Length: 271
Ligand SMILES: [Zn+2]
View (cartoon, rainbow, N blue to C red):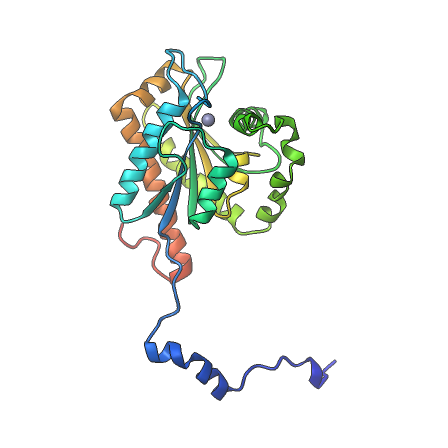
């Protein structure tokens, strides 16, 4: 029906000009949402030690070292870095989410090290959020990484029924999930290029720490702390440096794509 009453009434051009005048007079360009804030989440901390390596090494220490070095490198690139933990302290998964959301981060990277009873298993894998794990081993990894949630007095098995986790539905509806998938792909592509570190691919599972953040988010398992070779990589300065540089490249590549999408800046600018 072509009824007059259905026509949207836009302000007349003269009114529109008056409304825009303050901006035009001040010469303000519309604000461009640039990629500038990175949230780095070092897994575990304090009483939550994470996985244990064969030689007694602890995941919380290994991933903290990586997170600190990555943060320094990104800050040196002019990015604002917000860390969810700044020392060997316990930080709840919900608190990590709150820190990230309060900071209005453009990207969230959670750094972890993997573990297996089979010391032969090694390599890196990167996750983004899904309600259903992509395979059984992915489900096991998420279960272990969600253990801190249980330590906060929430039985792990109730994770799926928790209203906090029910927010998942909202996230799926946003573009964050597509961007999370893209970011996880960039992280894993960079890690897969490292010598001696096998790529186990991009996977999906329900990680509580990824679920509550309102920005693209990925969780990387940089290697198996239970495998002698990966453990050696994680404990050596050279090994850590190559991992950190790979993570840095992934964040910067994502940032360039982010800016290209929002501001018309070529994705390869500055390369
Ligand atoms: Zn972990």
